[in-house]
Image 1 (tube, rainbow, N blue to C red):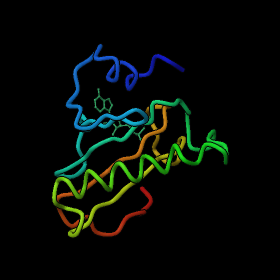
Image 2 (cartoon, rainbow, N blue to C red):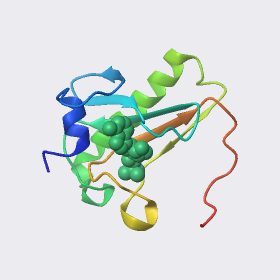
Image 3 (cartoon, rainbow, N blue to C red):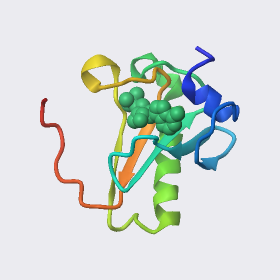
Length: 116
Ligand code: AMP
């Protein structure tokens, strides 16, 4: 699992608007934004789905959340609020099998979870 579209973004093999990178995490704007701000936070350590993250690697997901919150503060919308989402497998709507956290912001997002 070293050749997903997100690896290509990290390796600058395909273009993306990368807004954040540190030793553990990178983040870039979603190509099909579902809100005025839609950024994906991806760990540099690979897991296909959240099902594959063992307890001892919980910090990987914690870092995604804290990086997203830091970005929200830096961009000035932390107090207004935002949503973070991780999709898992088919019913969760996951399409890229490298774990990532969606940060959605920039407008009132309403409630969520309405089945389609
Ligand atoms: P998920 O459906 O949770 O797996 O999320 C995958 C996300 O990756 C979707 O919201 C896509 O719009 C986004 N995506 C796919 N390809 C790209 C790309 N080349 N650049 C930025 N975002 C992408």
